[in-house]
Image 1 (tube, rainbow, N blue to C red):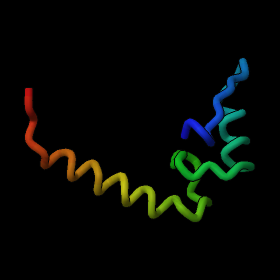
Image 2 (image 1 turned 120 degrees about the vertical axis):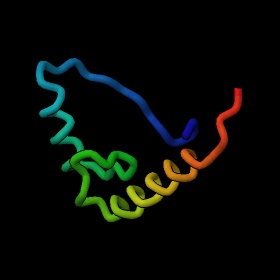
Image 3 (image 1 turned 135 degrees about the horizontal axis):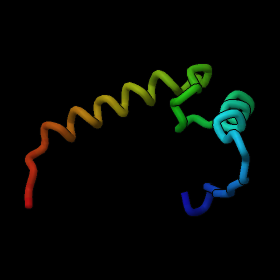
Image 4 (image 1 turned 45 degrees about the vertical axis):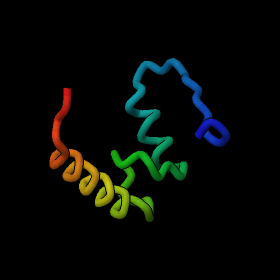
Length: 62
């Protein structure tokens, strides 16, 4: 991610509107919210569910 990811921000009075526009126009495969049209959506959703289940089964240590 250090080589390929970028972060920026913009002040916006209604950020949820901007978020919806960006998700609909850009390929953001790691963002599942409002992104069902992405080809990777169902696979990533499944992988995250499997990871959550595995994590729940792990022992908790102090």
